[in-house]
Image (cartoon, rainbow, N blue to C red; front, side, top):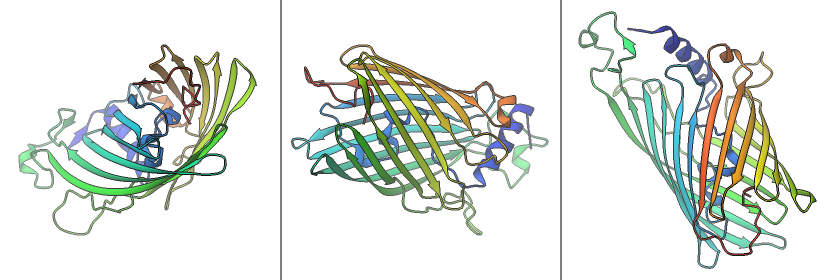
Length: 320
């Protein structure tokens, strides 16, 4: 069986990265999508929050990763508890993963802020489609016993935890959203070649306010996987008039040692109304993949369902 040229180039690059063990999706607007990687963030804002994210990675490269996410979280019991969940789809090549996560967080009052302890339960459905039309066989698929003639799928449960601390000026978090190294092989016999790998996320950030109409938020998200190079997103966002946001992110990358990093990302956002925030980002690739793709695009919409009148919170849109 063979691929067309673009599909083959992508497959080579993708599996080269996978050797290092990175499995979780990455998000350029990670500061507005903390529910994707830290259950301790659930209920961190006074209003229920509904978010939707679309990410198209490595545009122009057939079979490249594509991700869609819907998340929701809200406070309960006078803010002592937070609940929430994520529904996401991640497709790459002939592979697709549907994820459903539910999160619970309990907040502890500290001297200057609040510490949340979060738990997460998740269910993943992995699916492979070897009858995809982008795969061109050199012989009839039904005559090759090593290739499934029909799509195959597998359901995998998992659980994780997260810690999230915040006050009026800074935040930090630590999480492992999936702790169990589940077998995700589709083969029914033989040794296990593929497992889920626990990912550790460490985050932090701080707000500076040079003037009443300007706030600047530098922040970092560090991603660690055993056996893989350390990866980090270094971001700085500027919020003007509590409405317009512009930012820049440098992603160090974890796969190509010879490059200057993985990408340089630009972000733009607007708090269009009291309830709606819109964000858009574009990744400029720094690895050899830039020769074959037009970068990565990510769009985000957030709805604060019942924003309280007169409350100024760094969640909007700096999003602690």
